[in-house]
Length: 298
Image 1: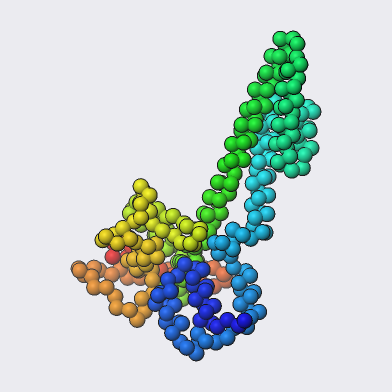
Image 2: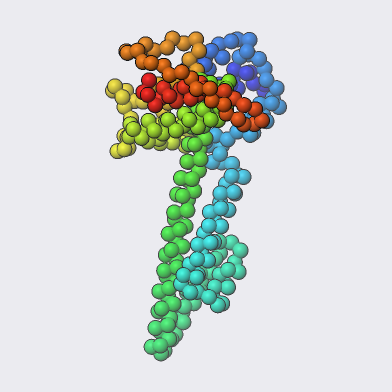
């Protein structure tokens, strides 16, 4: 079934965490001729197949295999470190290493431990018992270490993936802004500058970002874990970013009325600074003029 341009852009905006009432989004979708244009199914299918958001990423078989292999490889390395740490060598170590699957290596370790217990039960001399008890103690420590790592591995995996999704959501939001000086300065430089300013302001306000993978939403939390409020109203991360970037004069306000200053401030002459890259030079005077304003508090 063919999709209209309006439906497709609205879907992409939702995946990027944009509000359906965003002025730019509303402005684009308000054009009936544009919004009702039918897009080829092949085009939308290719784009949808290349995008991953919260639930689709968590249920992607390719990603699951990739990170599952990384975790198990890490556990195999820890197993080798444990064998060396407890000086487990000879036939026991080789029988464990010969198993291909990580879970089977753990099973083999338990099997060897049961053999040690069986030998202990049939041992007659105090010397044999002492040696067996020492071996049992060593293997028990190894099993405890491995069990601890198995328990924490899913938590570490989820935390890693959640951080990746949060970073992607932040980048998508910053990418949606129209920055001042985009004609002269690479947008990735402006996004990096905006990210630094946002982190600084978040630290000053003593709030942190909390990503909800289920809703693909970033919220603001206080140090005690409560929702961040200002003037008796909850503050969203998007509105916080809007205010910081506007205050820092990083946003393109062409056509908008500039806020009235309470006191006249001298404006420094722009520096004619040239940035070279990608085989061409770019005038970055506007960018550095904005940073001068940030530093002086304007």
